[in-house]
Length: 174
Image (cartoon, rainbow, N blue to C red):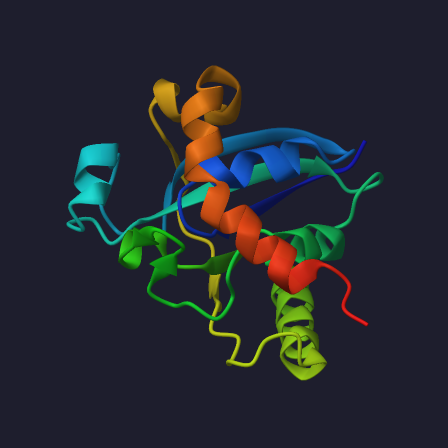
């Protein structure tokens, strides 16, 4: 097995876990914080915008079963790539959409995918998701892990706007 790491930020990390966990070839999906310079950030600190971090998920995957390009495509389908100031009801820099690449090949694939999405005309606005080098990923507190499984009612409420957006933009239009 050949494993690789992907890190994606796209609003509340609670909403980012399930789509990736359900994909064949995914070994782990961890909610956490990245992109800042503060060591060992906590949820309260990140939420107060004092660390420079954004909520993200770290995905360890078997690249013999699923490739990075497939994960980037899934990422686009779980976020609003036209909103640089948060995602859905989650607002602020700690919810900004970012693809954090861990190597040059990931950067190239992410940039190509972003350009393809922009050229597709699927969205009326520019694709503003950032593509940045990965920084240290700090796992979030235990109660944030697997939120969709441990708090199904709250998760269902949290994900409503995201699901409506996804249906509107990713359902095949004739």
